[in-house]
Length: 241
Image (cartoon, rainbow, N blue to C red; front, top):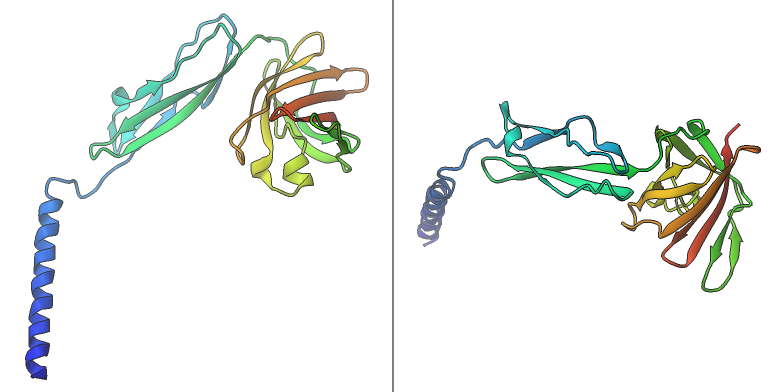
């Protein structure tokens, strides 16, 4: 009896395996054995700066599926309004022959500044006496330590800062780099500074707005960005010595 059961089980297992192989062959019939995802490369880079009122000429996006040039199949979604300053995302996407998608995003910044800002690239210190103001309660808390950020002029009059929070969450609270607020600022001849774009990966949003100014006499950049309608991060920033 045991011999019969064992033989029966072996035969049943073999039958199931054959059926599975047969079924698999039918389901995958006509599907390529190797699929090449489309590789997209933005011509000229991912970030572009355009003067307000000027013309935006899309430099395009190159695409390869394996060794085949499929650039003509790339679709672009999004629009650039050069009449208004701001950041405009453009998404370039394509499907391979097995209908697997790929996409990349270009950011186009429309700016109304052309003269360079008198700030050199490098590491800057957010003074320990900087403070966060809470609109709902009026409470003010000092940063308490000197935190470091970087500032880079990426276009004449356009400054990129590594953290518009000034290190409040990423460094002071210890949340890490995902909670540093990337920011792009526009610098004007009267030494005022305006917010162009901001984004914090950890929460997926940006600043509500900002006031700012640079004092060429002492080299201090004062920024007061507002976040979620309640927090104002008043920062006094100077080049690290």
